[in-house]
Image (cartoon, rainbow, N blue to C red; front, side):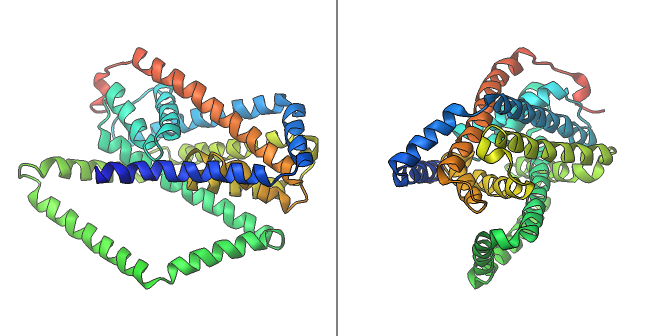
Length: 334
């Protein structure tokens, strides 16, 4: 019961925070600002929103295509279509049950393509680690080039990081976790033949193989190009939505990247970015002279575009993937 309540709190608290931020910001708007907000939503050019929708969908398809390189390195061949469907299933599950999407994505490939769960999940973890490094790189470059404008945000971020890093308790916990992990791995290696431990050992080996798949793959160049394409499309789908409103259509690339970085971290902090994403976009664009209600409206346009795409194609994927189920003998070994 206690574990269930903790898991429930992890879902309810972030979503509740997003809803609170939305209501709080909306209540702070004056009547004229609220009128301007709804006016912006009405007069937006939804052609560009549709383009953003398609660019986002293409980025997720390439993510499924990129996943093939890791799976092939482990000896499993999965169709790009099924990989794409699994990716979309993971995204829609994340909207409903935050942090469970990666598990659902790996489970879908395990069920319908016979790839061991621990290996597919390990490959997803390595992929997520790489994507986080890319996001941090974009963040660092954006802050470096726009430090004068983003100084309040940068100072707050650096203060938070330095405060955490300077905590002795944090370093003690990290050291204990590292030591405990190393001891646990050694124990599993010694007890792998005993009942009850063999399954854990297989899970550990599968996860490590999935993580190593990035270094074992033969097509590293294609994997890198696919990664660049994914992030290029992420930025492009974000950028084209700026064209939907007259006030934001002429903004500089610096403003777009600032909004992209803040919006990305809003999605990381609050599952699905509900509430927090529009507020983050609004706060970023205020630094570039865009009225709060306009930035808030653009944030909602962006969020609705990508969330509706995930809901539509995630739902279709949940129906379509079982219909395309294939038991391929070659998935045992290539």
